[in-house]
Image (cartoon, one colour):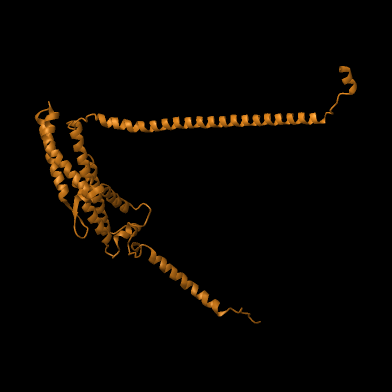
Length: 329
């Protein structure tokens, strides 16, 4: 009895042999696609050792958390009056430096520490915490308060304009404090006269900074000027009362009345024009009716005359007979 062996093409044998090799290649690729900290497992390691970052990476992340915490504490405690830029610049620079080190840090195995914390989940705790610091600093436009190095690195040295503004503010505030502590009665006039030169100098410097930076004036300068103006106008009542401008009010009144006068005359003229048009229409109708009646009377007269003429022509003429003439005679 012969054993029948089915004929199998050579290309099928080759594919069957290649499938396991291809599957092994995909497994190797998937293994290499995993995070590097899950690549090698040493003897005696636990699951916690495998999934947890190395000690070096833990230390750099702890530094980031500490720097962000210090900056947050500084910003919250200096929220009113606002001194975010002036008093928290050191904390902000520390956060930036530590975050830069974190991005470049590698562990003992040569694995970047950022692979443990970035782009692994939807929470992104480290990235969002750092983004909070950057957004708050940018919202306050604090970079405009300080000088930067040629490479763009921020320093804690205030610009000359901001430094002069702070000096003017300290002098103005000192003048306010002197008059508050010296004499309360009659303060309004005395403080205004004594502190006005310092206040004007501070206000002029603020206007100069506004022209220089536009809308990018740092929040510390803006808040300081707003508070000083509020003290000047409300606490010391140094803003002079505005006099009633009689002619200004008259001008506004005339401007407001002009449209009413225009519409009034427009209404009157349009009414007269409408009445004139109606009157012309009525006169035309009267003339038309009169002409029509006159023509009808004239045609009636002519037709009656024509009938009489026709009737007279159709009647026979009678001559008197001889007998009658003889009787008469």
